[in-house]
Amino acid sequence: MEDKMIEEVKKVIEKEIKPLLAMEGGGIELIGVDDGLVKVRLQGACASCCSSQYTLVYTVEARLKDRIPEVKGVVAV
Image 1: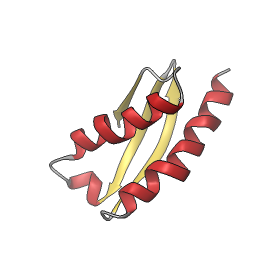
Image 2: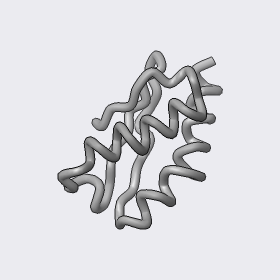
Image 3: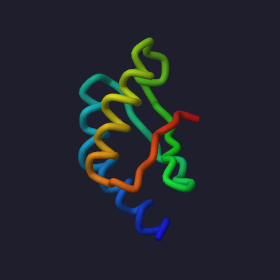
Image 4: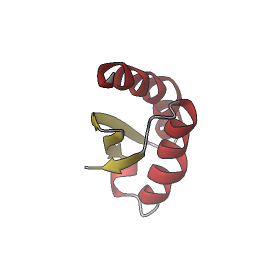
């Protein structure tokens, strides 16, 4: 089940989230999924931006939860 969820998360990140972040000079890397918690690393401009927590919650987490109901949350590592 978790392998399927990882693949779904990868698809959403690649197709929907990465292009959004790239427009602002940022990026994102999927680190893993553990019991519904998605772990990511923000890159580029997003890594040092003062609004990165906002981006994480209102862009990344919101999009993933909308597309994959099993996602419980997203954390930056």
